Length: 606
Image 1 (cartoon, rainbow, N blue to C red):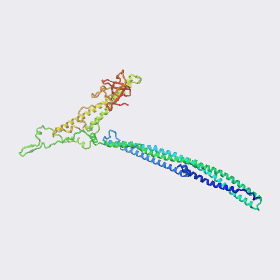
Image 2 (spheres, rainbow, N blue to C red):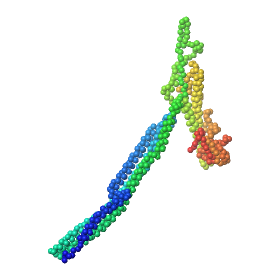
Image 3 (cartoon, rainbow, N blue to C red):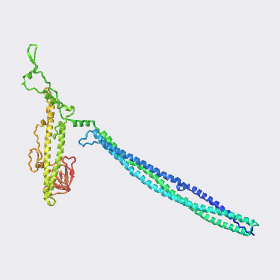
Image 4 (tube, helix red, strand yellow):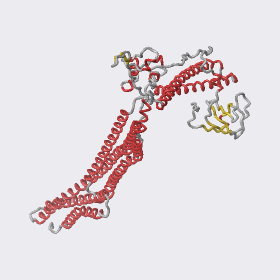
């Protein structure tokens, strides 16, 4: 009875073993298909699905390379900045520190200063290059490197999470597989035990039933383990498919895009690195062209002429020393016994007189010898009498020009104050006209002082020019009528004694005080200055007609052309003159003004 009741569990166990073998082979089949299908594209997600660690290293290398290039750019722009700084220090070192009046006017010096200016501009362009590299290249690289590191960290964290989840599914599937394998082995053991007891005639029925129940229990547990394993296997296969077909390709695609953007960014910064230099090449070329032009401007003849103009004294070369015969009073006995004198007949007939002191003549001649040696230092005086004639004339003319400019400013200030005073008198609510009187008096005193100074300097200048003209006439006469005894002595040309320099009376007057009459007859008064016609500094065309009803204004018709003799000083009125000579003020907005360039009388008011 026990031998006839045998269940057919052997087939079922064989089926379970087959399913286990197919499950083991399924994973390799899936991987081979992914690899085979992934060869159709050059995507990291399909071609490098199993190279997560290598991609991690590659992306880190890419960021390190970008940081290395950024460091290179930083060192390069530091070199540019230091180079520009050294160039500027070099220019500052060799630029003249004297005032413009003391600067040499030689073309070689001016060209060198022009080269220094161009070099300073060249240094500025190097600073521009460093600034462009700092902003467009180095700054962009550092910012992009930070973003790149953050993106890489995020993508790698997602990849690790996906891998950890897949490993968790694999462990669950592997545990269920091992449990299924154990249950199958226990079921096989229970089957062998049941078959052995069932075939044993000595076995009791209870032992057979017990072995049979154990066999059925183990078989049932194996079935449950099989179902659990199958479910875990199906879940793992699904998660693995999602991992290698969705998650990993997506993550690797993001890493690939990130790496490609890094490569593109490097190419852009390479181009920006070169463009920073190329943008300043035209300006640098202009700087170099300026240096070449400065070199071409060097003129040896002009420099020689400047030397003559700068150091010409105006002296005549020293004349010949006269022969001084000290044997005039000696008498000699001739062969016939007569006493002869060494004095020429003409000299004997001349009336006796004092002999010139040779030391005096030599001392006067020595006054000229400083031209060939070191010039003795003399204190600077107001009339520049310590200077040679030609240099004295230049300094006097320069000082007269400066005084004329100061006088013109005082005249303009006086006119502006008088005009403001007239406005206050007509409109008392705008201000008190008496408040301007102290300023007007001060301006008048300054004008008188400046006129006195100008007159004194003009007197000195006329003396110098008169001496030079007489010296030129003497020099011309000496060239046409040269005799040994008739040569002019150079004593009258120039002496160091300033007390004998001027032979005309000098006026040393102090500036008059307000309210006191001017005692100097050579100075000018305000009325005389006002009678002088003002110079024409431009012309204008009337845009509209003006009736000129107020006192001091000028009537003009539309399209009439007038001469400008005084600019608008901010009050809205321009002083003009008609062709007939009539003068007056016209509204500035009524005329179209054209100023003459380089006009001597033009004054600009700000």
